[in-house]
Structure formats: C-alpha cells, structure tokens
Image 1 (spheres, rainbow, N blue to C red):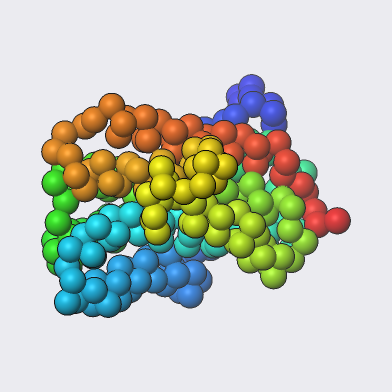
Image 2: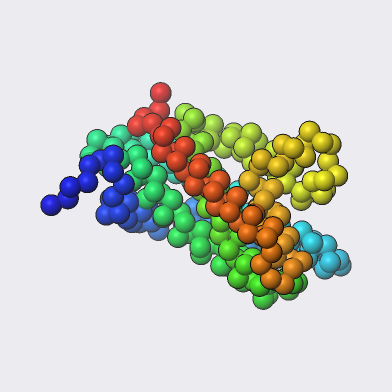
Length: 253
C-alpha cells in the first residue's frame, strides 16, 4: 500500500508525470525540433559566421554552447507548463493524489532527459565536427551545458506561474533572460563593466554558466573557480525549482 501523501514527494508519481510529459513531447515534432535541432543550427551558423576568424568562434562558441540550451529550455518549458494550466490538465492532475512537488519534479525529470540529448548533440557537434578548440575536457563542457539547460528548465517552470497566456510567457524572456545575456560577460569582461552592473552580474546564474564554460576553454583540469561555477548553476536550478513548486497555480486567474 502506498503510504505517501500528496504533499510527500513520491518517486512513482514523479516518474509517471515525467513519462506523461515525454509522451506528449514525442507527438509534438515542432517542440522536438526547437529543443534538439535549433541549438545545433545556431552553433553551426555561428561557426560559419566566423569562418575567417576561428579564434573568435573558439572564444565565444563555448559560452554560447551554454546559453543556447538555457534559452530554448526556458522558452519551451514555460509554454508547455502554461499550456497544462490553461487547458485544465493541471487542475485535474492536482485534484488527484499528486503534489506540486511531484509535478515540478516530473517536469524537471522529463525536460532534463531532453536537456541531456540537447547538450550531447550540441557539444559533440561543436567539438568534434565544427572544431571548437577547448583546452579542458569536452566532458566538462558537456556538464556545464547540461546544467545550463536544467537551469533554463527551472526558470521556465517558475515564470509560467506568473503568465496568463503563452504570449505572456514569451514576454518574460526580455525580463528574465536578456539582462542575464547582456551582463554575463559574453560581450565584455564583467570586471570591465560599470561597478553597479558588475555587482548585479555577480548574482545572475548565467554569469557563472559562462564563467564555467570559459574555465573549460582555458584550463586543462578542474579548477576551484570551475567547481564554484558548477555549484552556483546547480544550486540556482534547485532553488528555482523549489520556488516553482511553491508558486505553481492550478489554473490561470
């Protein structure tokens, strides 16, 4: 007999939720293309944009390898979760012995599996096909790319609670993603920014995602800074998932 209540995180309920989400994704080829094909195409396009300057591709390719999965996972996850709520599916699910934690964990597990495939494809293509030159191990590059994708998933789950339509979910991108993109150190080193912007960038998780990629790009082993960056990105994803479970609503107001 199952003795876990709806407020206790249950592995069985979590995996059942993840399986349901993956079945839905399997029948949505456009979403699969956005998750798996678009990051690969963007990295390929970037490589040939800098065809005459491979050093430029090497310097920013690793950073964008983490940023592209974060953005695509954020977009797809926020819209998919909102669709569950506006269609009434979420309300029906939560009327069953299924807690918010089970639902959020199930979504994170399902999209996390997709994030693994996405990160493997993008990293393998960048390093072994497009010739991205990294000093460190490509496996460390893959680790950071995967954590970035999971962070995007967590952020998407969180902001979906505050959107009333899919259009509003997309509108959160300028508020949540773009400031991080501008301040993460991709366009200029963070220590060369205005002091107030540098302090803001110090609390944005994308800054540590880019720093982690740059650590792999320039160092052969696992540095202290790399460990810090990985822990910050992973911790941010976990914190945002908890916030997502706390703010999840059954229906759109």
